[in-house]
Length: 334
Length: 118
Ligand code: SF4
Image (tube, rainbow over all chains, first blue to last red):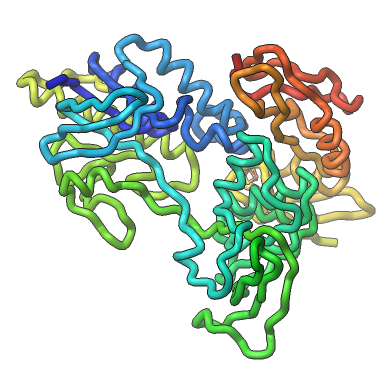
C-alpha cells in the first residue's frame, strides 16, 4: 500500500498552515488533500475584510489572506497537493481512502492532520414549523451563490439568527440591490461580533429584532411570508406579539458544527454534543498520531487564531513522526 | 454631548464614548488603541467604509473575481459604487492587488482585485 509520512485532509487556512509548519519542522513527505478545485477553503467566498489583523498586522479580505498561504504551499515541493480529492474513509490504523476523478486511492499515513472545517447548522436544527418551500438557504450557501457563482438568491430577505456570516450577508444582499427586511435573533444579544452589527446591519438601517423568533414559514413553491414573535426568558412565544413579514428568501445563520465524520469512523473518542474529539490537549485526539485542527477541533471566531493553532498542529505531527522514527527531537522546532 | 460608538476597526469591537462639541470630536474614551480615536473622528465627521464585492470575469477561470477599494470611501457613496461595480468586466488575468479601476468614481481610491485569477 502507498505510504505517506503525513497526510493533511483539507486545504483551507487550517490545513495549509499545518502543512507549511510540518514542512518547516522537518517533515518532507506531505500530502495535502482538498475536495474543491482550488485551495483556500471557505475564505475564497469571504470577500469582505477583517482577516489578518492579528496574524499579518494588516486588514485583508478572505481571498487575500488565503492567497498568501496558497502561494507559500505551492512553493514547497515537499508538499504534494491533490485537488478534487475527497476523503471517504479512515481507520484507526490511519489507513485513509479518498476519491478523485477517475481514481479511488487507499493509503497508509504515519501521521494525519484533519483540517476538515465545519458545516452550517440548518433549518432542521431550528425546528421552525410550516411549509417547506424553496428560498431557504444557509447564510454560507447564499454567500457562495453571490460571491462565487454570481447569482442573487432572492430579492426580499429575512435573516434568522445573527451569526457573523448572516450579518455579513445582510450587507451583501443590500449592496447587491436586494431588500433585507429583518435580522431575527432569539437571544438577548447578537451572536456575531458587534462590529458586524454596526457595519452590516446598522449602517443600512436594517431592523434587528433581538429576543424574537420565526414561528412559522408560509409559501407554496417559494417562501412567501413568515410569522415573527417575541419570546420570553425561556424562548417561549409571548402571546399577542406575533407579526408577519413578506419575503421570498430566508437565510439561516445559527452557527457551525465541526465536521468530524472521518475521525469518528476511525473510532476516535467523540463529544457528541459539540461533534469534536474528546481531547485534553489542543489539536489531539484519542488516537496517537491523529490530529485535528481549525474549526474541526473547535469553532473559532477568527481565522488568525485558526492559523496560529494549526501551525502548532503541524509541529505536533512533526514531533510525533520524529519520535516514531526513533530519533530525538531536535531543539528549536518552530 | 456624549455619543456611544462601537469601534469597527478590529474584532475587539471597543465600546467608545465620544465627547462632541459643536459637531467636533473633543475627546474619545474606551478605545484600546489609537485607531479607535481616528475611527471616531471619521465616524462623526464623515463616515468611511472599505467596499468589498466581486466583479464578473469574462473568459477567465473564475466567474466572479473578488475586489475591494484600497482605502475607505464615504459611506454615503457605497450604493453608487456598487452600481458602477456591476458594469465592470474583467477579461485579463489578475493577481491580488492589481488595479481594476484607477481613481474609482473620482473618489481618490482604487478598485483592486483580491484573488488570483488566470
Ligand atoms: S479601539 Fe483599537 S482595539 Fe478597540 S476596536 Fe478599535 S481598533 Fe480595535
